[in-house]
Each structure stands twice: as structure tokens, then as C-alpha cells.
Length: 294
Length: 342
Image 1 (cartoon, each protein chain N blue to C red):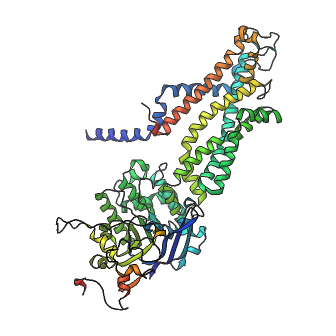
Image 2 (spheres, rainbow over the protein chains, first blue to last red; image 1 turned 180 degrees about the vertical axis):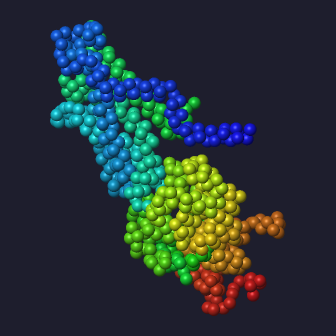
Image 3 (cartoon, rainbow over the protein chains, first blue to last red; image 1 turned 60 degrees about the vertical axis):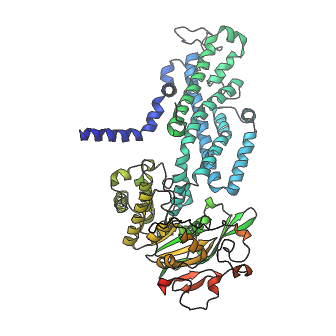
């Protein structure tokens, strides 16, 4: 009987340690988001096997309605919409993750430095952030895309290099509170170097909000990329992107009579963005106990 | 011989455009294996003095240029003020360790106890992982933790305040320091745990024969722990004595009032405790004379004197900073009314 009691206690202790994980999976939306994301990643990795048709091959049917041959029809110059849709997932995810990676790397480093060292370092970095934030991002990207050769790399680098400002502020703010805590002082007392304190004591403590924000950022970036491609300044045809697929809908005939050209791309965009946001929300709840849900 | 000697330590902090003298010419020494307590009210420079021994004010989180420190800190006959930051890091945590007032935030919430303890051992003693684990476990045991295995694998938030303070003590003592600085180690804990922690520090101190410099507000702690006591008032030492002398024959009016404020439970009488009138004035307002004169119950002649009373020797190992005792001839035996000592 006693043993049973103890097993119960240990079980409780164990579940307490995994509380974060269970909190992450508690919401149905988070699981929904994860499933969608999993499918998207699967699609992009195995795009050549799954799509069947070559996304660049032009058939003789222009703007044909869905058929057995082309499940989602063909676009205005005769390419298979379904395979273009699948290949476009690759582009969107690449842009989303690539941009976020650059932003997080830059924002995290500069934010840590600004917060920890303060003084003149802080002023310089934060004024840089202020300056970058005054530019409307869309216009800035338009200008840069106009100057540099528009394309995937240009988009990723540009969006990455202007998107780190918010993250830097977030990280700096967190570092300012964390560096006053006793364990940082204790680390100094233990004879650690500044670099070690910054990267092995302070940085792990700011990773939670950074991770959450990065997830939301991926969603935001995918939308930005789609808008740019829609305007013709993002990913250049013939490379498929949901944005430039949607730009076909600029013509009224397509919009009214050929819905298979724009509905799938819009739905994919919507699903992706929603999925990333749901996962981000789940992460926030799991990592930050102060936003305990009802 | 003296393990640590502090000479004319002066610390200034920048407030606006001016510097404010927080610690003003402090001299003291700590011998090997001795427990020295620093007492005094909030803001009198105890903690600042203690932190400056580790040269922490040069660290970034004290705002680079907002602090100036001068004087001499001799530790093992090496002047710490002249050491480079790199050499200083070898002393911190190794020869000189510190425990803090608030054990709740003193451990990094993201790492297990064994990881945090292991890091220190790896850094200073170059231990391997297994070795470090065994050594930390034995330290925790010495610090009075019973279920060592659970604590070693636990994250700080699953431990109680007393447990965390024990872990902190074990961590601080892991490299066998010669001097432990304890900055109000029991203030955040409840009274029963307080006692256990003090006993833990005391037994470790005896076992390792290290010196302890302890900061506290609590005269109970002083009586329990100290060999010698330094009484601080507004950035200066106003009285220094061994613990028995201090309680039986306090000389400085400030010390007298502080001790008078401890309720006497043994001879319980309904009597009002006499508070020290006034409050600590801002340092810039004090002018040149004795800093305690506005609140002093003895202040007679003192108001006419425009300079600071010197810290004079009143007895063997008993020093006091008050004009009352300045006038007495050097070398006379004792002062004041203390029948039991004559």
C-alpha cells in the first residue's frame, strides 16, 4: 500500500517537470497548427515526388479548368497549378525560416550586447533600431528590391536585415531585468568571464520570448513575401510563389471565371499563417507560465 | 596574520553630475578563521564595502563609469585594487566566495543544481564531470541536505528557500575559499530555517577554518556568529570591538542605542524601547563634523567641532569614533560605566 502511495508521489513529481510540454499540447489549435506545419514541411521536402507534373512545363491548355490530368487546372500560360502550389510552399517556407533566422541571429546578438553592456554600446544599437523602425518596411523592401536584382536571396536578406529591430528591443529589455538578478551576480562571484555570463547564463533565459516571437515572425514574413511577389518585386517568375500565383487574379476575368487559379494559393497562405500563429501561441503558453490560460 | 586588510577604502557613486561618497575611509582587517560581522542600518555602506572587496563595482551592471573606488584591499598580501580583471576572476569564487541575501534568485532557473555546481568546479578545480558530481554531492551533504540525489537533479524552483540557500553555501564553499562574504544570508528566510543556516555556516567555517565576513541587521545573528563586530554608520566604521566587549560595553552612542533596541526577553518588563530619533540624513547634508551628531543623545560639545572625530583606540581591539572618547588620554584603561569590566 505504501509503495503505491510513493509511486503516486513520484508520478506527480514527474508530471510536474513535463508540465511545459503538456501545456504546449493542451490546446487543440496548437495540435492543428502542428499538423498543418508538418504537412507543409513534408510537401516542400518531397515536392518532386508528390506533384507529378513539372511546374515549369507549359502545356497547350491555357487556363484550363481542373481535370484528371491537372487536378487544379492550369494557369494562364499552361502550367500545372497543383505542382506550382506545392513548389511554392518551398519558397514560402524558405523565405519564412531564412528571414527569421537572420533576424533572430542579428536581433539576439545586438540585443544581448546592448542590454548587457549598456552605456554607449546600448545607445548606438538602440538608435540604429529607432532609425530602422522609422522606415515603413514595405516601402523599404520595395526600394531595395528595385535597386538589387529581385529574387529569393534578395528577399530573404532584405527582410532579414530589417526585421531584427523588434527582437533586439525585446532581448535588450529582458537582459536588463535578468542581469540584475542574483544568479548573474553569483556567476560573477564564481569568477566567470563576461562572455560566459552573457552566453551561458543570460542568453538561455531570454530564449523563451525570442522563440515565441520568431514563430510569429515566420508567419509575418510569409505574408510579406507573398505581398511582394504579388506586386512583382519578390520571387520572380517562372519560380512559383503563392504571391505571384495570386497576381494572376489581378485580371477581372480570372477573378470571376477561373477561381482555381487563386483560391488554392489563398487557402494555402491562410492555412500556413494561421498554423504558425497557433504554434506560436502554444509555445507562449508553454514557455511563459504567467499567461496561464483559463 | 591578517588574511584581509582594508585600508582607507573610499567608494563614490555618481548621482547626476556629482559623485557621492558612499564609503568614506574604512579600515579593518579579517584574520584567518575569524568571523567578522558588519552591522548598521540600511544604506550605511556595508554591502557596498563587501561587494567592493570582490571588485564588483567595476563590473558592468554597476554602470561603468558611475563608480570610483580607492584605497587598498590586501588579500593574502596582494593588493586587489591593482589586479587585472583576469587575475581577479581567478580569485572570485576560488579564494573568496560570496552568498547572497535572496536565495530565491541566486540560482539560474534554467539549469539543474548539479550542472550549476559542476560548472564552478570545472572552472576553478578543472574537475571531470563524474568527479565534479561526486564532489558536489559530498558538499551538499556537508551543507546538511539529506536527499542529495534528488536535489542534485532538481531545478531551483522545486527547492525551498532554505534548501536553495544551502545549495548556495555548498556552491560558495566548493573551491575551499579562504574568505566567505555572506551578505545577509538569512534575511529572506524564516526564523527556524535561519537558525539552521547559521549553524550550517558556522560548522562549515569551523571545519574549513575559513574567515567569514558577515553582513547583518540582526544582533541575534551577531551574538550567535561573530568573533568581532564592525559597526557602520554612514559609510564609516564608528565602533569596532570583539563581540563580548561590544555587548557588555558598547562605547559609541549609536551602538548603545542599537543594542538598547533589542528587546530583552529574559527580564521581561513592560518598557518602551527607545528609538534612535531622526533618520539617516543624506550624506551631502552632514557637513564636516561627526556624522551622528544630529541624532546623538550625548551630543554636547560635538556641535562646536567642525571636523570628524578620529577612530581612536579605547581598549585592546576596541576602537570607537566619538568625541567623548577623544578627550581621554591615550593608553588609559577603559571608559564609560561598565562595572563588570573594572
